[in-house]
Image 1 (cartoon, rainbow, N blue to C red):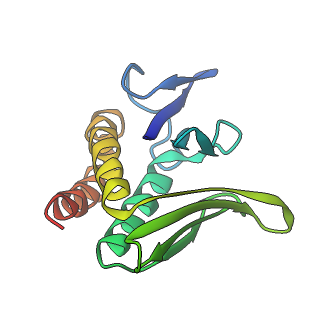
Image 2 (cartoon, rainbow, N blue to C red; image 1 turned 135 degrees about the vertical axis):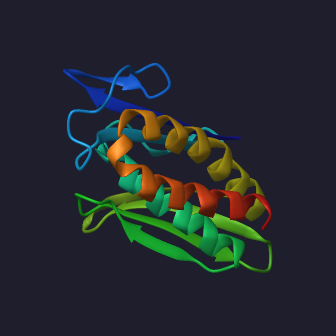
Length: 155
């Protein structure tokens, strides 16, 4: 089971994106959290907050690479944390891994590639639709990510 949860920083605390109200104070710096758990293994936790819209865009781009059966690596937008999606073509699976370079053991889990792509689509689409309301100045960029998501639905 793959579970994504998105929280956004509003005023003084993190709130689930779907219940957060109003517009973000700074559309260029939308602080938030993407929690990711795969089969009970926490990959991304509340400790790894960052620029949530940008990180989601990176994850969607990673999903596009997975659809092409290519591995993907990125760093968080504002931290030296690495997120890796490593494809195993023989088993049609992907290892999802979070690394703090030079520090400790990585958090990782293996999941069927198609299932992970579907989870990205299912979680990312409502995030970007909600962000259009909360940060309308970023609509063009969010619409571009939504087009990528639509492409993943048919991949």
